[in-house]
Length: 237
Image 1 (cartoon, rainbow, N blue to C red):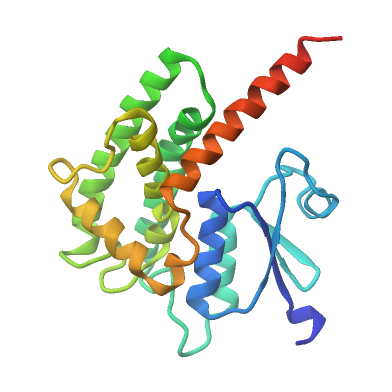
Image 2: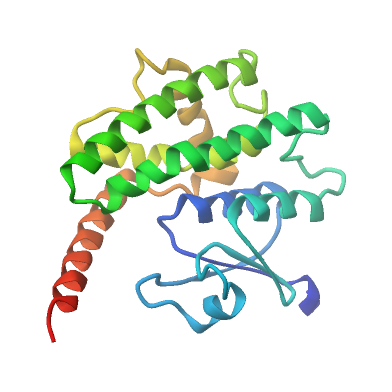
């Protein structure tokens, strides 16, 4: 493979945003090298290729970096759009706009509250995050019913941009259920999303990528302990 065609992905295993890029690459059948990073001790490579946000994922195509997960997924869809490869974004302009809308909704209304539940110790913040996350999931249940038209995915018979955007958050929701005893994906309140999550996890492009909830629970314990150490260190001279 020529150097300009080489594909690398900087990421961390637990990130739903990194999972998006991995699923899109797998779906397109693109060979790539995965470069695990440590956000507690960021690599020089990460700081070089994403000097603005200093976050993962970063896709490196040749020597050109592409940052931000939704942008990366769109880039993958456009670059590897040859016949025989599945499309991620719909061909119809209106359907494409709707897919982008709901993918953005995931990032605006779901991701921030998941982040609070991972990192916060504040009871009030956690209670508010639970409430807001439940509301967002209920809204996504309605969106799924409309977008899927009775089929298995937001994209109908095949996964699309919204499926990939939402894809690995159910793993974290299951982890929160284990940790906090609250079920965000409920067969009574969100029956179609429960079915969707099971179908999505069985997709070949996704099932090797999505982390197990139990592993995320262990990571959260580690992250909270590391955070306490950092706070304690900051309080000393």
